[in-house]
Amino acid sequence: MAELQSVNHSAICVHDLQQAIDFYCGVLGAREASATDFVTEDVIKGRSLHRSIIIEDYLIALMLARDFMPMPPDEQLRGTHGFRHAFGVPRDRFKNLMAVFKQNGVAYEGPVEHHAHGPFGESIYVKDPSGNFLEFLWRRDEGVRYDGVTGVGEG
Amino acid sequence: MAGVSGFSHLVVDVTDLDRSEAFYRDVLGLEILGRGFLNDERPNSTLAFNTHHRIVLIQVPDKVEPFRPNSSSIHHALMMNADQFDRAEERLRGLGYKIGDNRAQFRAVGDRNIDIFDPDGHRYQLQTYNPNARAFEPENVGEVVCGNVKDYKVGDVKAFVAGKFFVVRRAEGFFALSRWCTHRKGLLAWKPDHWCFYCPMHGVTYDRKGENTSYFHDVPPMSAHPLSIAADGTITVRPDELIERESFDESQLVAVPC
Picture 1 (cartoon, rainbow over the protein chains, first blue to last red):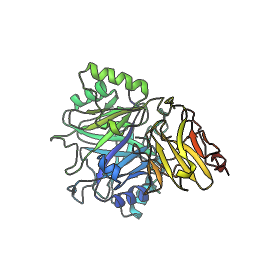
Picture 2: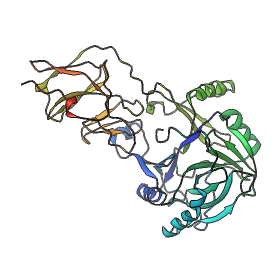
Picture 3: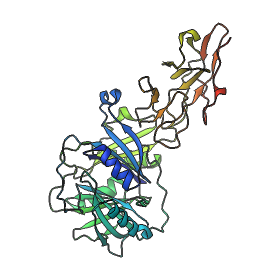
Picture 4: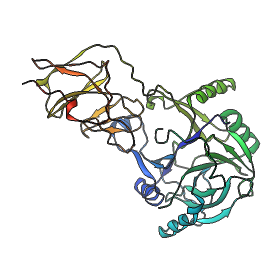
C-alpha cells in the first residue's frame, strides 16, 4: 500500500483564461469549478488570477501567466515542460476521442502503443492552446478496482 | 464529447531516476510498480497511489526545468487521508525536512498542507482534510444583541465578530446566518458590491438566502442561528446554537412585530 491516495489538483499557467476554458470545457468536457478574478480582497491577499476546472476526478487551476511563455514548435505535440498531465479514456471511447479532436481542429500525435507488461495501453498527445502538453490514453488495468478518488475540487 | 474518464498519471522529468525513485518512494510514500512501461526510449519508472492515479518518472539527459519560463505558482497537490498525513509529518521530520505551508493564510479550518520539492525542484503540496473540518465549535458567547429592527433596511447584511454570524434583513423578516462556510469551514465575507457571501479559501459564494451560488456542487446552504425580536424591536441572536439547513424557506425568517 502507498502512503498517498491521489493527485488532487495541479496549477498550470495559460496565456488566455477564456481560451483555456473553451478548450478544457468545450473540447475535453471539463466543468468550471471556481474563479478568482480581479477582486480587491484577493489581490490584496496575493491570490493568483485563475479559473479552476474539474475533469471528472481532477481539478486544474488555470492561472494567468506573468508574461508570454515561449511556445514549443508547432509540430511538437509530444513533450513535457518538466511535467505532463495524462488523462484516461475508456478503451471503447478512444477512437471517438480522436474523432472529437479532429472535429475541433486539435492536432494530435499517435496513437502510440505502450509495452504490454505495464498498465498503459495506447496514448495520443496534444497541446492546449497555451502550449501545455497533455496525454490521453486507455489503460490495461481499467477493469481493476482501486480506492476511489475523493476530495476533488476542494483544494 | 471527449469522454475523458479521469486523471491517469503525471509524467515528471527527472535527471537521476534512481535518486528520484527513492525520493518518491521513501519521502512521499508512493509504491514502485516497475520500470519501462512507457513506449519511450528513455529510462522511466511508474509509481502508484492507492487509487488508479500514477506518477511516471522519466530520466532526461539535460537539466530539468520544473516550470515554464514566465509561469508562476506551478504545483501539484497530492492527497492523503488524515492518518497518512500524520505519518508523513513524522516521516519527513525524521528525514530532516522542515514542515511548512507557505499558503497557510488561505487554508480553511481543518485543511492541512505541507510544501515539499522533489530533487529536481518540482513543487508538491501534501494535503489532507481533517475529519473535524466541518465541525461546529461554539464560542460560548451567549446571546448577542444586534440592534433594533429600525437599524436595518430591507437587503441589509451586518456582520458580527462575537459568535461569527451575519444578520440578514429580507423583506419578509430577519434571520441570522453563520459566517462559517459549509464547504470547508473558511470564514465568509459579505461583499455588498456583488450582493453575495464569499469564501476566500476556495471561492464558494452564497446569496442572501444563504444558498450556494458557486460552481461547487453539493455545498449545503449557510447554517443559521436562532434569532428573536422583542416587542420593542430589539434583535437577539444565539450563535452558540447551530441550525443546519437543506434549503431556504420563508419559515426560517423571523417577522418584524407589528
